[in-house]
Image (tube, rainbow, N blue to C red):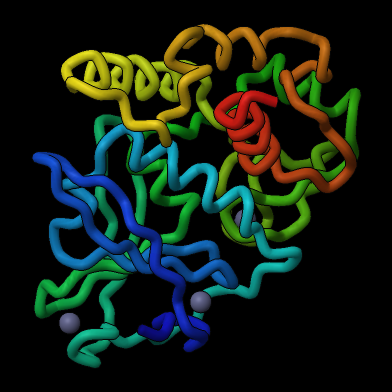
Length: 236
Ligand SMILES: [Zn+2]
Ligand SMILES: [Zn+2]
Ligand SMILES: [Zn+2]
């Protein structure tokens, strides 16, 4: 299947679904986006979500091209429609097929939908200013001048980072599910299961800088947080 935006071939990732099933998710690493066939994302399990963290982190493109303005459904070729949705208090957007074949969503908006992203607080923005001059907008990839802007001048997304608390919640869900199974899946991030506070601790400690991860000029804050979580999953 080709990506609705850049038309390059998408990669497939086999993910565990609820009720012992599995499905193949289509991912475009050039656009950092997913195609979910209808209802597929409802079947995602907590370890499926953490698995996606690893896949996205390990295949991050060095440069991201903006999404096409007109995109067609890979199943029926109808034009995809931009949808605005809300999950609790978080707004997110995606492109849906009018024939309900599925939807195309960027990884950033997917994280928003699942409540993994929160805006920086005022003290965090102050700390950021002391450390770097620019960051890369995690939503669109444009540079953001942190000395003057708290939102991306290009896409208007506020400076945001991965929410360690929500990551911890998913790990707790994962632990609960794993304890119900007879055998533990060897692919589960065992280290996190044993020590689910590790994520939160890592984000709070100053060992890797004020945000718990390495911060350099033009880092993407969400991407850097994700890399820190993936390092924990892999036990580094
Ligand atoms: Zn693409
Ligand atoms: Zn369609
Ligand atoms: Zn932006």
